[in-house]
View 1 (tube, rainbow, N blue to C red):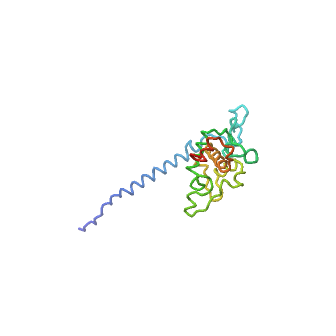
View 2: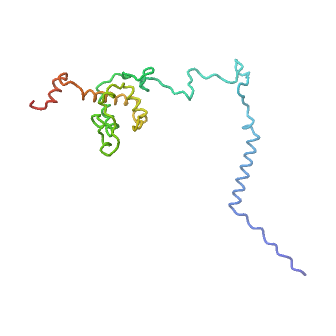
View 3: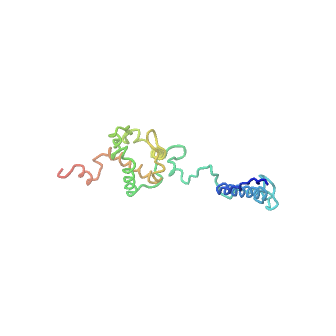
Length: 208
């Protein structure tokens, strides 16, 4: 009597392969359900398709009043936020400058501006001693005569080697810095005879 051949048992499926197969099957079932279900064939209007639901017979609705396209930049106060007065740089500040505003401007100037422009606004900041290029002096005739709107634009967007500070310094603080720069410009060209006696005595020093 012949010996019957021994048939080896089926190898057990690998756990990793089984898991992948189950996931694939689930994805196929889900895709089939989506392609044939309500998510694919849901009711909707095509562009410019008429509608009996609305009284005007149009499916597309007009934007609500005062809607602004996302591509349009909204400016609430053009002078305050751009430094422009019509088609030119503004010669005036968008709000009255108080002593408190000047003090805030001095603080912000010393934080953001002195490394390049120096404490006096003469362009002799720390970066010059480190070998970097010297910025122009605020006391030059050109910058003394420059409108305040020009300063606002330069602070906001940068100029030449200067980086933009629009995302670092708040809008009103930019104007306060400009007001302090104007004060620095006046301080370097003020006539001593027109100063109050208290200030003149400080300039002369004690005993003079």
